[in-house]
Amino acid sequence: MTETRAGSRVVLITGAGSGIGRVTAREFAARGDQVIVTDIDEAGARETAEGQPLCTVRLLDVRDGKQIRDLVAWVVERYGRLDVLINNAMVCTDQDFGQLADATLTAELDVNLGGALRMIQAVLPTMQAQHSGVILNMSSVNGVQYFGNEVYSAAKAGLINLTQSIAVRHGPDGIRCNAVAPGTIATPHWDERAAADPQVFERLAKWYPLGRVGRPEDVSAALLFLASDAAAWITGVTLPVDGGLLAGNRVMTNEIIGGSD
Ligand SMILES: NC(=O)c1ccc[n+]([C@@H]2O[C@H](COP(=O)([O-])OP(=O)(O)OC[C@H]3O[C@@H](n4cnc5c(N)ncnc54)[C@H](O)[C@@H]3O)[C@@H](O)[C@H]2O)c1
Image 1 (cartoon, protein in one colour):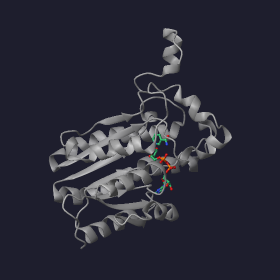
Image 2: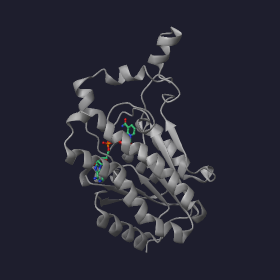
Image 3: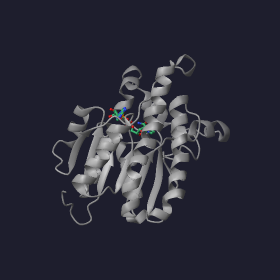
Image 4: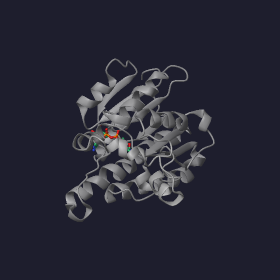
């Protein structure tokens, strides 16, 4: 077993080889946490961990229950505990729902919702034995309102419900479970779209009461807070990290109030 420093937590993040997961892994490591950087893309995970002595890379496909159970057993064997799980891995196709092949539909549900279900199943016994633990699910504004991407959105809505289930059932075990619902965040996920449509973020920024799209750091800050003792009495919630979008879309409200930005 490897000793961890006082105040340092053992944090496992899925899909941490890119975007929000990468920034989040580095932010947790920066506060002294031991971070297990996992992804199906090993090269991406290695890049996340480069120059980060507190980051350890493990290849992980969240569709594979055995890989997940083996990884969690490895973490517990090596560090003796698991304090924070962040379910962040995702896939999202821009193909039209009506034309979506069954295999694509199934894969999207399997990664985005199935992955979180399997990860939570695997970490619960350890967190119950510790009588502590924090589980954070990466939902989306798509899980709350319609913004396109039907299958992705259904999975993200499922994560909100799952967050409540785990919070209520396992609160008495000392486990907290919360979700975040980001709006548009400029990450590599958007690269293809932004290459085809260079003005996309500028246009989408007009929807947002705070006048810009989000950065990965906006989301990692919320995750750091929800994982911390400052959130000790917060569980079962989904925190929008969305520049105010779920409160109101500025393009729509300008139509009604006659304003312009
Ligand atoms: N970027 C946004 O606009 C936005 C908005 C709302 C919510 N989110 C959520 O934030 C999270 C991170 O998004 P991002 O924009 O950083 O995405 P990203 O595409 O940059 O990163 C996703 C990561 O998941 C990994 N992944 C894919 N399939 C996997 C699998 N089977 N097993 C393990 N890892 C797998 C990818 O390799 C990649 O590294 C996602 O849950 C996403 O739904 C993003």
